[in-house]
Length: 331
Image (cartoon, rainbow, N blue to C red; front, side):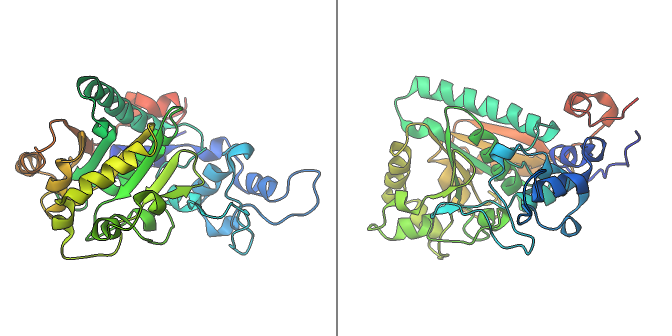
């Protein structure tokens, strides 16, 4: 099967999510119909939005999620029909699929494998860091970039979802891009009391602001109400106390910060002083070597900085993960 040409200005990871040959494995309308009304059962509310409202790729992705993991039922009119426990946030799987992101419970593909490689190196680094220091901070990662538009939030969310699949890990994804917070919106959720509120009000218990999600082992902490004193709040002693409190609450917890771009906002350099690792997203078709060097210099308060190269030209004939998972050309 010949694939349509892939745009050169998209990232390798983003492109991998678009190459999967869903139609070869699923009959989208039939799969959606089975989900809406299991064979042998009486008519029931649809468990997916109408097929017409989503692309074939999105419908196939959702349909491929095993039944035992399919806790995101949505009625035919789009209303929430899950009956999820109170206080548990529901992540919009359809929105994740539309954005080419990891979808919890979906089959493993090239995108998942790319982030498996990324997280494995970060976890190995964390283990090495923890061996050399008794501090809990080894369980902290900052995901950032030099400039806006390089894919840091996209990578931070996918990294958090991938980490949450680990057997011995609890993940807390913190939106620390205070000027332009986008984590909650990207997951189909509304903003709530968050990090800036906690830093500004010592009476707030940080753990009470942590939002559990219907993705096992994944929780969120919003950015909080905007303030012109965001950098100053981060630089206060309160921040270290809050971070220690969040880490002490669960010895398995790894905290992933989505930070503002280092060359665009000052909070990134302050956050770098508080974390054990920085994952710097570099866009191959946009970020200059000078930008990379300048960003690394601003973040050098953290001793461990790794680069993730984004927007690399994808070549489907060269194998990698795409061909192994049936995403390359079929012969």
